[in-house]
Amino acid sequence: MYVTFICLFCWIWHTPQHDGARPFPTRKTRPCPAGADGKLLAPPTRSLAPRTRGSAPKRVGAGSQGARAGSSWSRGRARVCGGPLPPPLAAPGRNPSPGLLRLPGSVVVMDSPWDELTLAFSRTSMFPFFDIAHYLVSVMALKRQPGAVAVAWKNPLSSWFTAMLHCFGGGILSCVLLAEPPLRFLANNTNILLASSIWYITFFCPCDLVSQGYSFLPVQLLAAGMKEVTRTWKIVGGVTHANNYYKNGWIVMIAVGWARGAGGSIITNFEQLVKGGWKPEANEWLKMSYPAKVTLLGSVIFTFQHTKHLAVSRHNLMFLYTMFLVATKITMMITETATVPFALFEDALSRMLFGWQQQFTPCEKKSETKSSFNGTGSSTSKPIAVASDTVKKKHTKKT
Image (cartoon, rainbow, N blue to C red; front, side, top):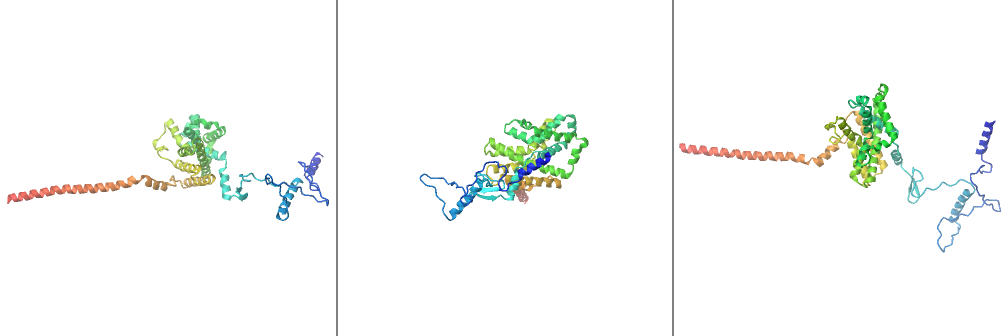
């Protein structure tokens, strides 16, 4: 019985009345006035044009002005009589929706699908899936180092600290460069707990299930591609953060963006030095790896874009740079090659800028050999001439 009563009440609530009005209006509506013939009269509308001092309001006449007035009266009548309200106009200078672009002159144009795609991509949140991929790749790289598993079993705290350096090394190094507290990354409890969980299940999971699952190539490709996406976000964040301290400071912005994007591989040298396993040939400052090089290139590009020297929108540049990173990384992993994609460009640029001395040294060597040959020839010809003179003198004496 109660169910029947509730259903009947809901039906009465949602069923409109026969005269077209709402059964339970949410606001009071003023009825439209009726004329002598019983038809509704349109209420007068107020002109939105500003009045000037000394000028009387203009009356609506016949023709097109009357038609416009009639349309405005009909809109006013629909609004006063409880009809549907017109959609609210967007504020000047603000798009009514993400897919609309308001141009000068109140012309609304749809954005292109490319702009919508890149804008949505640039607004993607890195937490939690992309951050999980970054932590997983970093911890797995730590586990593959010789002796890392034994250190984790003997001294878990040292292994955990090393894992945090691999995961948050970019943020730590950027804080050091900007004279901020290096332990600032510890303030984000959520990311610390997430990275610590990844470290724990990677080193101490029963039957080593995490490593076995990560050994599949599709899983590695997916995790590596998602990690490269986080690299773009870190570079952009580092460049923007450095610009807050040093306005349009190119060198500082490039350095901080590079440190935040590739600081994990740079700051681990300090960790190896503390442990006593540092090797000069593995130093990132002396022999830069591919992630360090491509991060430095991205930091330069985004710095120029931020200082308005590169006429490209940020979301388009983020999308293109990220696609380049992902495609390059996946190609290198599939082909199992460590060759840098722009190695030819590096060789050509180094020859153009720093190879002139090497080109001049062979020419100098050739000139030296020619001059030495000429000098030895003249010095040898002199003793021959002296010997011939002595032979002639002896011959004259005998005669």
